[in-house]
Amino acid sequence: MLMGPMSHQANVEGILYYATNRWPLGDRGDQLLVDDGILSAWNPATYFGTAGDGSIFYPGPDGPMASLRLENVRDGLEDYNLMQELKRALAAHPDAPRGLVKRGEQALGARDIVTDSRHFTEDPTQYRAWRREVARTIGLLQKF
Image (cartoon, rainbow, N blue to C red):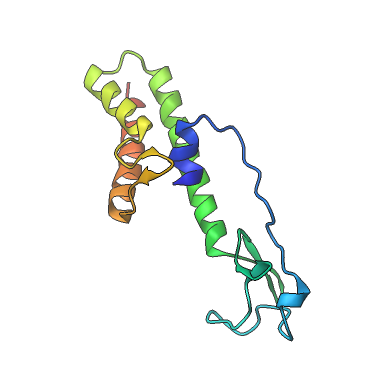
């Protein structure tokens, strides 16, 4: 939500992600790597005992491991790009039927899933429906 529709609504043009891989040795004890499986006992504390605090990579036995947080960032950036494609499609097809243009503008606004940084859906079904609507509308606009 944050990297996709919220950023698009706010006209964000870039991101700066703090501390992508902060793993202070003092919080690690004897376990310096996440090397004991998906239910690891590895301590994710990154800043004075705060768990995770924004880390998007973790130290794996074969190099950095992606976190679920990183997967969510990627999904959000893909949604942002999808919205940019819809914006371009709307601009490229001004003569499309008015109902389709309105549908595209509504999907681009994403108000069905987010109204501001504190009010947004937590329903994944509703979010995926919005995402499908954006993609469908791009396809329909490209036919004109």
